[in-house]
Amino acid sequence: MGKIVIDPVTRIEGHLKIECVIENGAVKDARATGNLFRGLELILRGRDPRDAQVIAQRICGVCPQSHGIAATLNLDSAFGIADKIPDNGRIIRNLIHGAHVIQDHILHFYHLAALDYVNVADVAAYSGNDSQLNSVKDFIQRGALEPFMPRYEGDYRLPPEANQQCVAHYVKALEMRRIGHEAVSIFSGKVPHSVGVVPGGVTSVPTVDNIMAYIWKIKILQDFVNNVYIPDVLAVAKAYGDYAGIGVGCKNLLSYGMYDLDGKSPDYATRERLFKQGTIGADLRPGALDTSKITEQVKHSWYEDATSGLHPSSGDTRPQAGKSGAYSWSKAPRYDGKVYEVGPLARVAVTYAKGDPRMKEMVDGALKALNATPAALFSVLGRHLARALSAKYIVDNLEGWALSLKPGQPAYVEYELPEEASGMGIIEGSRGALGHWIEIKNKKIANYQAVVPTTWNVSPMDDKGQHGPIEQALIGAKVKDEKNPFEVVRIIRSFDPCIACAVHCVTPKGRDLGQYRVV
Image 1 (cartoon, one colour):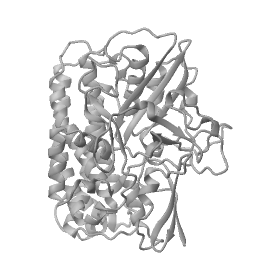
Image 2 (cartoon, helix red, strand yellow; image 1 turned 60 degrees about the vertical axis):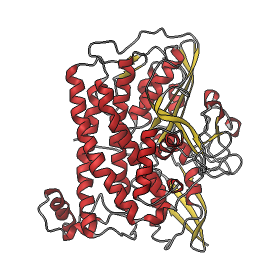
Image 3 (cartoon, rainbow, N blue to C red; image 1 turned 90 degrees about the vertical axis):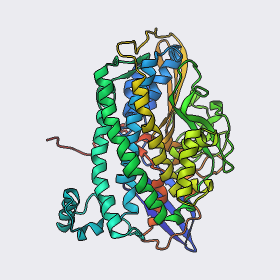
């Protein structure tokens, strides 16, 4: 019996430690460890509630727009104005969040995951005139292989020409991310950490100029998603077809829904959204979302046991470093006491299962191209495919939303800060179900809890000993070489874990973690 320890898992957001026990060439047990403590909930206590929209964005530098909007919906809910946001405000929030998520999905496939399947070394033999590929070729010949190295050596299956083309797209994807950020900043003011989304709506009134500037950038992203991203994902899926049955996981999927299509209902759990709210299991039968079934358990997390099993609205954050039997700073969110995976696969599958005609057309078309059944969605390739389809579904809707804005009309509604109130803001971040909860007393934040996507996916065992989604996806996986476990990292990265969201680092004694020189 052997043991694989990967610490940190590279090419993800933040640091994650994975331990796998290997027996007879397969993973017998797995543990996922978030090594840093997140203290944002404690930082928010006692502050003006309106600070939450600003501070909560600092939970993550990768998804600040998602946290900013979740926090803002949370405050809208607490302030009693969730159903009073002008359509312009609702639509502009969608436009900001839409452009953000598209560039984030591009980031994940090309810069964080594709190098597990694409052999960049084939660019050394490139003899064409593509300036970007020749730059990478010069890069390789100088022996400077970062950021492509180090890596585990995988069973690379794409032909040399396909590998070279994917590397060219890797470089092109950097430009697409810039354009995506520029589109976000048209209405949000800047990236990261938007100043454009606030309780009551947004800070900008749409004009013909900023609508057209936004659409121009979105059309560039749409062309890349449809003609580069989707074909590349399908090419990888065809070459690595066995990964449609690897990394299956818990087969329970949860989505909060994404992009409000109507703001008239104050209940985010039932409001009409582009991506639907709900749950599904292996049978693809949809279930309604009931947020009262959400709890966070901490038996195997470094938090006091007395805080285990609480709903986020009454959740408590009491760190207990070194607790016996614990192995992560991540809590273990559960829905109705069961393990649920969140992410693009969940929101695509829930929307598909609920019969959305456009989503059914996209998913069925992709599965037909791969000669696969819906069961293949529960896998490493299923997660990559769902992320690409999620990007396409979003980008294909953004132009229409932008054209529905009414220039010069209000995008904001006034409100009064309540003496006492509670709220909930739920959306889908790039990596899945994101929820913020707030309790206000004496016009101050009495309690704040954020349950983020990676906390769901990277969770340790819960009070019943149930492994988290990534742990379950790893258990049973075949590993050919314990010293070169490329199968393990492919499974992990298919979830796109973001430890920056799930945990954070604080230094109560003021100890320096490092020094940086800004030039």
